[in-house]
Image 1 (cartoon, rainbow, N blue to C red):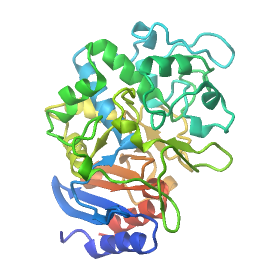
Image 2 (image 1 turned 45 degrees about the vertical axis):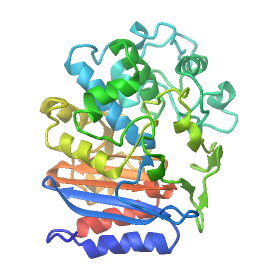
Image 3 (image 1 turned 90 degrees about the vertical axis):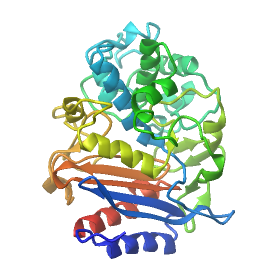
Length: 382
């Protein structure tokens, strides 16, 4: 575990404190530098009530870690000439025609779906009586058994939040993109992802189904102590807005549409393999120039509304750090990051040749809480 360039005792202390203060139930943290995993630790419990310890090979519901994987699969199809960034969504989804706020028909491109500039949103960014909830739209985390055809029908029935290309809004765009990839490749999204990403990288525990239920982490919700997540459940997220709706059993229902935004499961080790492969150029799954595009700001001066300062852009699959000084973070310019609402966060810092994966089973502390901030501070103290 020790490494001369990493203050491992500080990282251990952050994890131990999060557990003792009952902010997380369990976690797996992996850190790689120069292509070598220099820190790895599983701590706490994967299932508190069953007294099942967390292990390095524990399987987590990835939630939005899925986006980086599906984005990589989309880029693989792009490299093969099967789609282009400026292609229009209706080329493959002729019935998916949501209206702009003024009532006119919108034109949505692949680029806009990949970068969350398509005018879509998530229901947890709206009020309880928002249009998404009224239309029964799923965020990909709930409503086990809902089909993609029905999801797209519901999504197209409500107005867009803004004219595509004029703003940035975190959204269901990757779910729509997943449906497009299925039409292009004439096969299922799980098969596409396995063919182009998880198969070549031997990410054997990563997919849209749980291959070993005995290793699956039990999800918990923030509290002192965290409470076991119900099924279904609603977890508070932003003040004054609807909470995040979860149904942990969704992953076991084969009729659930494969959510390209949040639908996958996997281990910390598998996700580290993906991030490190991309940091080092992407071959054999992607060309280095394609990976560079993924880790480069693709939205110009549009504001990332999930960040407190206009210091981050967005590439394909994650946010890109434009100004460390403005963000007030120790990460270097060009750092590529994202997280997952089940309690995860990750980042790749190319300038420092550093990759960090931190998965927990506690929503949402492991993504946006003190644990994420403290861990970053400890990593860069080294």
